Length: 356
Image 1 (tube, rainbow, N blue to C red):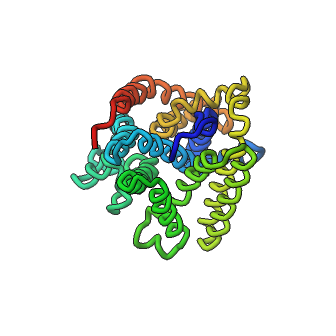
Image 2 (cartoon, rainbow, N blue to C red):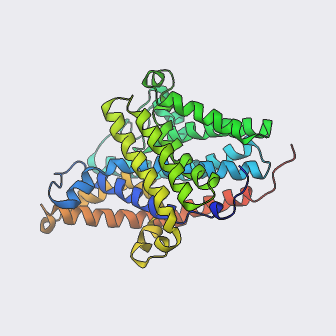
Image 3 (tube, rainbow, N blue to C red):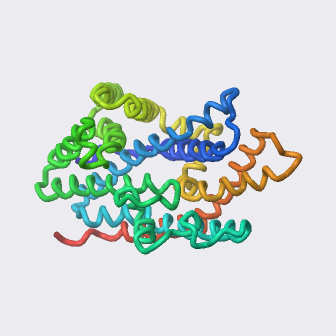
């Protein structure tokens, strides 16, 4: 995990990847619950937007590998790494929970629905606690915020990454951390292990992002980075064929996304600075806010637009209008909540690590 020179430069195009994934998931949920757009490229794009979640997992794996390597170089601690990651997701998530509750309460009052309905507010202490920690799937509780199940896996990924970092820091041997993470990857590619640790189902998606990061660090030239990364991703994909057909389809898409991230990094500066793609980078800066708040907002906005007679039956117009307004709401959420939480987190991360 020594600091490389050119290979260690920031991957600016990741913001564009984040923006693409967030908007794809948003359009997918905007299209749910109303007649599908079955014609043209927009219909296919909206129908398959759920795959954007798997792009997010690959991006997350890249970022966590990079963050863990930084902590290792700074002689930090696994505890500080874990705290940094939890502060990244929880403050904005808690605010999104409040937004969801307020919208559900408003909708219940309009429809004359009881506020005690579990669809309006969590029912009982167990649901409140699991919703606050985003761990509902692990305790067989219904997920309150639609996208919170992915955060459940994120928290699990952080714990596994922190354990790899802790082992590497204790031994002062980075390869031990890689071996630990790689061992979990191998287990994740064996379907029989998913029953005793469901986290392993998606750990390989996360590990793919780490592979992209690793290939860019260990290889001395762009050509060898591309070759080594392609071999690793290809080998992981071939191993994934041991899974069920559906899981292999998801994972195949994740592998393809990881490979594109590897290849496109060769032209990172040129693509990130392209005027035609700047809007994706802009969306990527608040992609987490888009992801968090779009689900409770977009359905209600779409229902309101549907009430306008002039727009009745105009499925494409309703889809685009509701998506655009939801992005505006997410940007406001970002400015008021996420950006401030990130400023606080970064101020903590800038402090020197405590002596060990």
